[in-house]
Image (cartoon, rainbow, N blue to C red; front, side, top):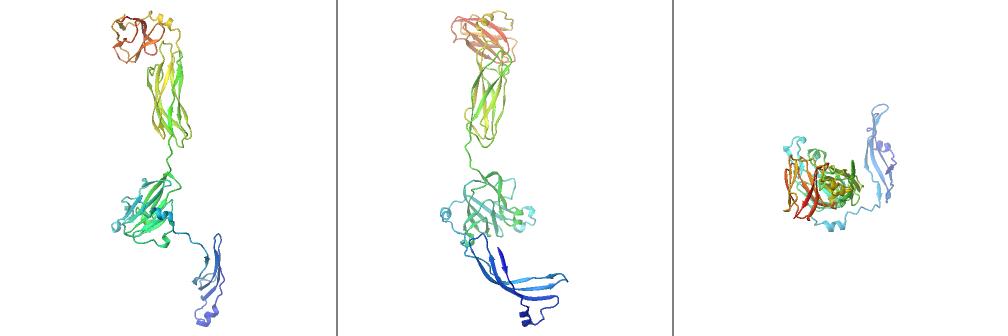
Length: 446
């Protein structure tokens, strides 16, 4: 707004009234006055004119410098016809006049007992300000009523960042007209309580806080400050699942069995999930290599892969299985925790190999008895014992596995139940997963 005025000096009037006594070589006194005009832009209002009347002094400091103070006795300029901002909001007034209070904040001070602000002399709710503490978490788009009670020794202007609020009530009387508009500071007088309402609709951030505090800087220094965050609305977390897989083992070397892990939908935050393998009929270290770790999905990713190394061999054996187990998901839920990996046996010509089992058996530390089996049970004696787990397999004449028995490490004797087998001839193989340790033809006569 630009204000212009035209002033007419009135030394003649001064001289007539007071003579020349007020004016000297170093001091000059006079009146000025004239109309004023306000040029107002960007406002829906009319400009108005007025008249300015004032006094002035010229004090000579040196030949080139003068001090020229002025005193304006009357100056009225500005605008007219501006519609005032409405102070009432019927929707808020009616809905929340008796609403429940969301936050209660009490102001306390140490008073004369505090001689040094560094000792923390003022606090909210009996807590000094701490930059590492978040006092409140407000959900975005929530409307809250805050109640501020001043138990201190002086009045405090309470200020809140992020939002404007509407004062609902004062314990010391009705609201003044100037208090009925939108505010971000309210004066809470000593011994009084003020309630205000605010909607926290913008600028949500769960990490970076906003402040509330007394607007007097030395009271802030004494500890009258607090922090709150506005948390964004929660989004539904995606679910994680893992698919089964199968792979032919091969006769040598290694192959990778890949398990696909899938999210039900993309997510805005990173997701992690732990995994590890677990033995079934396949044994880690011989049939496959154990694996464990953490799978990470970046924001927006939905598919990841877990690889497990499968070891090839030429042992006569059945299909074998192991599991991959998921756990400890962060920012997601697990709907399918376990996948089964099946190692397919691809060793051919079982009949020929089975015929060869009955010969060339050089391992005399392993004994199988009785043979033939007549009472449903067969005993296996191992001396010395093996420090690794073993597998005992019984094949029928067609090459199908009729019995599979896992034998733990350091086992010297084990009793095998053969009651479910039909009468007939079978071929026994004892293996550590890398090589055949013992082989024998078994006859079942029960």
